[in-house]
Image (tube, rainbow, N blue to C red):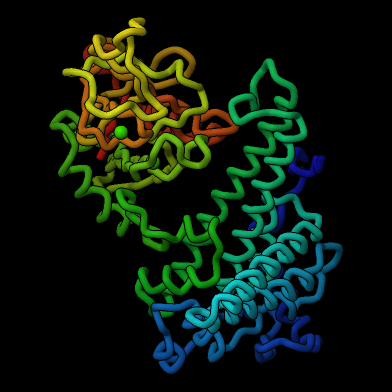
Length: 490
Ligand SMILES: [Ca+2]
Ligand SMILES: [Ca+2]
């Protein structure tokens, strides 16, 4: 088992990339680029920060339909910050291996683009080359010996190329996930056993999944910066997203994709994000929530990307978003975004299904995620209830309030709606809604090995304390209640 993941971070890299850039500028002038490089090395003055130089000529070759467009754009761009131009500085890790692996991966991606639409064997061969090159990049990143949550900071000091930074961030995220899986496998733990007090490997699995999550967050941050960099070069945000998609695999494409229900705000300023989210909030929130927002209190917008309960092998996916909106005392909308899960998974087994009354038995047999409730073996249809999965419905505002175990709860007597998977196919496609009269559907941090929802709504466990204090601190008590926050789910 690789215990690197459990290492305590004992040092930090320079807070900015400036010192590294100085070193790079000075050394670039004295270094012969390795063969195979396609960049020119207009020597930067020591201390000069390299900039992405592109002309209208290069941009005019942009083709939004293909990652090849990005490479054409790069071909005319003048870079002197490519990783392979950099000699190791002091006792830091060498960037040569990573730079060479990136060159190979870019070449494989270009070959794949060219193979598209040709013969199946050629397409398959090209895909295999990309896969091999991606694997090699992960190996080279591992070979730097850096803790994985320091790789992106380090590489930002080596290159400002938005696509290459994203490729490194994606490979590092994949590496962190694979290592965390290895830790869990090493202890023989299923997803719902990881990080449990009464299970082995409590500390190791928590550390590994925390690292995985933080590196995944870094991937999002790098994607954000990469889109910003391309926007600064004159591309629109959709163009920038499309350009970068040509350089990523599955993990990166999930960050860059347009996800129904959850706006893609990568590369946007805070003001632009507020322009996206505030109208959604105002169009959907209850009058009480809007009044709280007008008073300067934080409010939460829950944006759902509809997912089945068996998503991600039943572990759930943080493909939804909580947006904390507040005008504070300045009157200017502020936005904070958090990855979230608003759909249940099936890691807790069938015990978390609830009994829902239905008008009558469904005409069709139930799918694997629900069953008729009742003991009659001779005639199961004489029951008029279904054991099924539920989730908090979109289209309502709920005031969540503090309670035991650090969670946030709906009112004790409920008063909110849940969608019910009546036909048991694992998808909330049933148009079945139930009014709930208790506070059973709550908001809390995830489990360590999965999204931690049997119907509750969650944020990643290592972000929960931060999220909770963001939405609760400074909130007033309402009518003698505990502190709370209005959640509007769209
Ligand atoms: Ca979802
Ligand atoms: Ca269903």
